[in-house]
Image (tube, rainbow over all chains, first blue to last red; front, side, top):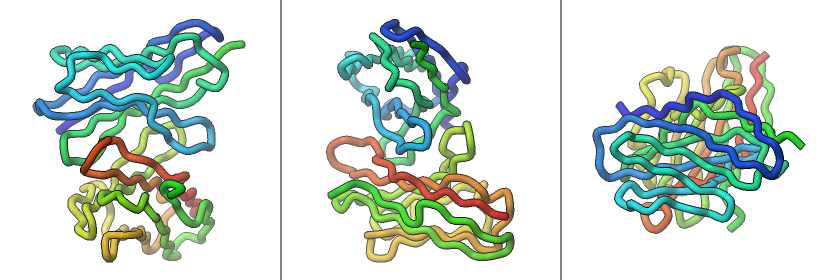
Length: 113
Length: 114
């Protein structure tokens, strides 16, 4: 069965600094997608970034980028120039093509002013 | 389209009562998912639909839980004979088989069983 592991329950970063959130996953599939979702306190879950497994190039969305290491089954999220609004729970997620999305347990990110 | 809509947003019920939640997905999305989330945890998969067909139901899901998606539009999640352990946030999400593959989430229904 596919699993997603986030080994950092909580992290803190100084405002304007860079932080990296870790994620590993386990799968025997070759066609799949990886996601990072953000869930601010008491608010809706929203997509931060998406990576297709068949793409070698790492995805980037403004201040957010990923380091996708397919052989190592690693998918980390880098947030540059951290802002107070980045404070949230971050969930790494995996989806096999045509299947449900499986989430990790999350990392709570604190931004220190 | 304003996104995935869930009703009610909050529900308080007495133990043993039945509750039903509704989810209206993004109109062009053919896939609909239900997840349960407890405080500080990641969303736990419950079940999902493609159009009106229920494709998978979590083995962790008690027989007290049932979901439907008549006509492949909105979906309902019913919990019968609620227990205190059912207290959680119930999240609905939808996605399309075409284009972006990510799921879009509703704001959730928070259930409190007293």
